[in-house]
Image (cartoon, rainbow, N blue to C red; front, side, top):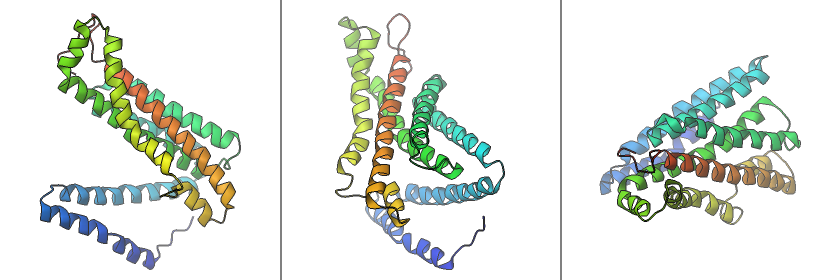
Length: 257
């Protein structure tokens, strides 16, 4: 695969930083304290995407591409599980995160390629897995963070439920319900407004590639439904496991969550 870096693309890349610079300027002027975070996020994104681009070139140029693509996907699932466990402040949720995110990814790949929605090619495999994991991870992290936060800040309420006769599972369910709602709301709202105020990336890419609009819409719906399901399953399952880990075997809330 030949790599040709168009000079015009570098100009466009520089122009795209105008809004980033504006946001940093506003943050500094209003003392919002997010200017450094914006800059760091921009630099990190550039480094990571450049690295991914180089790795993709190496994978797609290799005669082992059909072996390397699954390895890449497994690595993405592993990284996602690590990020979730770090947010949960315990490695005990890693198996649940691996099961939830990895299982959702396997289902998404099976549907897309098993039914011939897309050709079974390494780059398509990595893209579909990346879309699934990339959407499931933020919601799962938010769900876990909400559970940990609520178990800490609302400790008295949880202990009150236990004192009233609720068992650990019932008390945890109250926390999980609120945490999952917060985590899933953005994805649910994105699904509701798709096509009204935003055209999703997969559909846009297909249209630009010359695919018929109806075919592009159908493929986008398949991807969107898989993403919505994977987000809901992953966030809820890991939230349940995180909440259950907050209790001792004798139905008491642990001192340290």
